[in-house]
Length: 152
Image 1 (cartoon, rainbow, N blue to C red):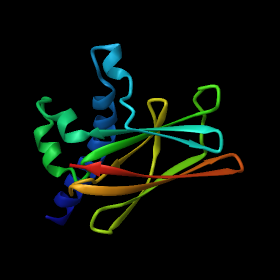
Image 2 (cartoon, rainbow, N blue to C red; image 1 turned 180 degrees about the vertical axis):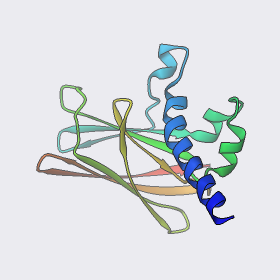
Image 3 (cartoon, rainbow, N blue to C red; image 1 turned 60 degrees about the horizontal axis):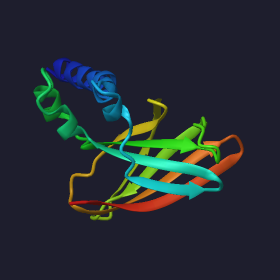
């Protein structure tokens, strides 16, 4: 029984890692593929552009996704796109988020490189204000950003 549960958890985790980014990237139109920027910041001459993707809305109605949606704990996917002063994409060595919810609880996540930016699954299940702190390391530079995001 424990082996079966372990296999279920591992296969769900792997499916989520493989299918969610691919599902989010799939689109019929170029205009839909462009990120909807929810927050912009300037940090030491770099542009930070954030996109919050509601995974439940994005995956709703997709074939064979209902069971996986029931297993998911993350509600959103947070993307960060880093650009230099010329507007060119910049490669970071590391990007992480520290998100404090309206209940005061923290979630710390490391990102993965994807779609020209850096993304991570996060949980924004409670309505209210979330504080998002970002740390990006580019060479010897440590770039820190902070903003609030409201979930209604």
